[in-house]
Length: 314
Image 1 (cartoon, rainbow, N blue to C red):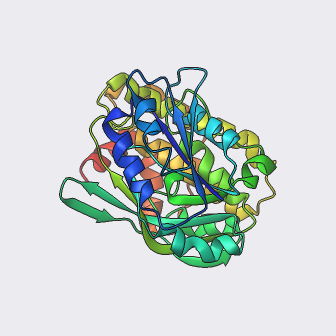
Image 2: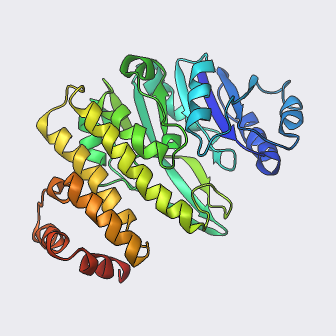
């Protein structure tokens, strides 16, 4: 069985569309775990109308949260499926996705990755990234970490539930970028992984998404939360049985993401966070492999403001 976990808050606007989409899925053995994070609308009434057509389980989070980490953790806890899939309530999945994944489900591959369409009005973008057959999660991460911009999106994976309990890894609560903090660590601990060239997930960009708001205070918190995830990585990385290359790529992946995230902040806030970058030695984690990367690292070490000015111009 596959457990499709859908966390939401005030889902009235999108829940019907989401459940109509799941009704079309060409696969018999799945359940829908709806996690209501303190909605104040009639979301549950909408869900009840689909009980006859879908195997729906409806739960409420205990604590009101920022982000969806707590809701997803509850979904994992309540899931009966051997595999877990995460779907955002305002997105859809391709009706044939599980047909294309069945081969790998039957092989009990721990992490199965597929691709995503990004839809903004009438514009559609197809994501890219490495494609490969069965390898270890370590090898998979090393192939994806610098080729796939959406490596840390949990919605692009079918994940064997056992891996969460084997690794004791969970989504961080009350933070932004909880995906960034968890998915890379899950991947490197997977015994097996595939990445297929099938566009199975449709991401609809909406202005009211939790990650797309315009609050400047939120932007500051997003960056500070990335530092928190980096701290957690440092605590965990030595517990993982990883080779030197994977450890270096993990540190580089997190470091690059933090450094880039600061570029749009105000000058005074950048200066404060630049000190944190130097304190954690993030620039040292960037191991240049080309002349362009050598130049980038040199600028970061000598003049971070010049680096951010150049980044804004690109």
